[in-house]
Length: 351
Image (tube, rainbow, N blue to C red; front, top):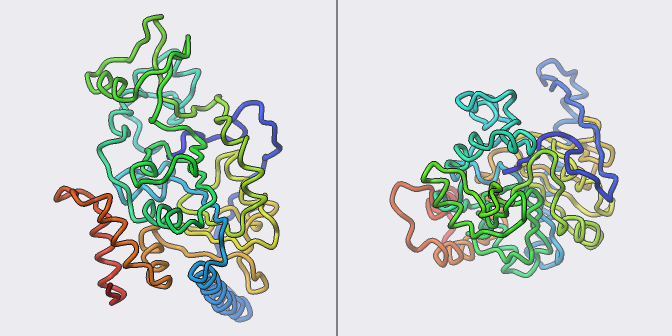
């Protein structure tokens, strides 16, 4: 989950990562002339060929420094709402907190005056109630195959850690619940203590009188130093960029897609096209019949990952990975086991 929702809210950035996102209405192909439909068919053919090229590169070990940019979409299957989906997104369901705006619950200035709404909401978001999804385990699988250079995540749910991904390859760009500090004296508190207090319907306080806040990034706060220390080097070394489950509307994270070498392939796994040049993003994705670099897999992340696992013939590897981390999955919970079983049934793959 991302807790930044306005452009440029990261504070004084050492980098110039500002990109103006323009929203364009999609055009129905029913209204398109025949030549445009032909271009669409040509793109689909090229997209499939380019996707197979990425799959072959992963299978043959040609990609050694994969960078993944992930957002709230990879956690939706675990029962965590994303932020912007109409009707179901988090921002559409905050009326009970009587906020000036939906974003106020994550505004550091509003938090200083009225922290209660955030801590009420935090009970629903706090890690421990949910399990990683197939998408999280796919990232872990890339790490186990020693091809993952870094996972930059906007999410604060810590599901990457629960999936066994080494914190050394993680950049939690918008912070997480994994740590907490006093907002006055900066004393660190264990997250279990914060969780216990929150679930007692109390505000966690420090002995100095300050409110103890989980280390998630609010509006008006600077991104973690680790983000700025690593992103330039990582993107310069990246040989495959994978973008998963994000609206790419939050700066400066959204601009990372523009910073890799222009010859490096980029794969978008998402419900819809985002971060494209036709939406006004300079250096953004280009999805047309002339482009041979950018590839898209549109749909929910779990379905797209199942397709990739089938194409990569990694179902056996994924089964072993999930067995290791989810041998005690409780009945009725979201389970990556169940998701994988669907993948095996649909593909007919064994192993």
